[in-house]
Every structure is written in C-alpha cells, then in structure tokens.
Length: 195
Image (cartoon, rainbow, N blue to C red):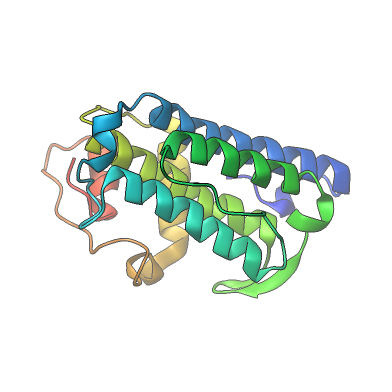
C-alpha cells in the first residue's frame, strides 16, 4: 500500500495521488451501493446487528468523525434515505478536501505512532471501505470477489494492526476458515467473517 513516505515529496503530487487513491477506493464501494435495490437496504449484513443501510451510515460517520477530529469540515451529513446517493455526496466532498495538500499532510500522533491524515485515511479507512464493501454486497446476496491487489492491501493492513485489529469497533474475533479455503475466505475469516 502506498504511504506518504513512498511518494515524491512534492505537495501537489501527494495531494493528487491521495485524492486519486481515495476516489478509487470510494468508487469501488459506491459501485456496490449503486447496484442495490430498495429492498436490500434493510437486509442484515455480516456485521452483527447492522443492516446494509447501517453499514453505509457507519462508513460515512466514522470518516466524518475522523476529519472533524483533525479540524476538517465536511459540511452537513448527507441523508441516509438513499444510501448510495449519500455515499456519492460524502465521497465527493472528501476527495475535494484531499485536493488541498494541507489536509492530507496534516501530522498527528496516531495509535501506531506519528502519521498523517492522508496516510491514516488510506491505511485504515481504505481498509474499512474494502471490508464493508463485501459486507454490503453480501447483505444484498452478491458474491463479491476482491482483486489480488485488494487482498494484498487488506492482508498487509491486518498484519500492521496486530491485536488492535480486534479492538472494539474494528473487527470481530477471527473465525476458523476451512482447511481448503481460498485466499479471500481466509482473509474474511481473519476479519471475523464467514464467507
């Protein structure tokens, strides 16, 4: 996964790259949301106690809280009456904010040490968007498959989180995958999900 230390130091280049990477992650999440019909939003998701609509609300709310905690105003929260539209509105605002190098470069002491808003957004909230994309798709009865690059990103992130992966509000305790499970099933099991 690309981090700020892997990118050329030019602020404009980093902002462009950060905004592009966020748009790609957000776009993948949005494609799943756009494919859902009205009835699917109330379907239970693999996240215990959450419907598909509530998963989208969680992703939006946690990103809004993260930005607010670093002094970045995203404006009014979008209505979840239409979760797909709410996501399009939210993700567009976030990508626009990330076009400002001062936002992504903002440094702070995170859970794992010194980091930046941009690096945390890609490392943790990017992980969150990919995992919850599967949750929403599964709630709607879709068989979503991760790409090899997404699997690598998720595995690398999970390795980096260590025991914090199972902190309150992150992932449920891992479950045992079948002995003949494929790579995606093993990853999902590690994230507390049964494929």
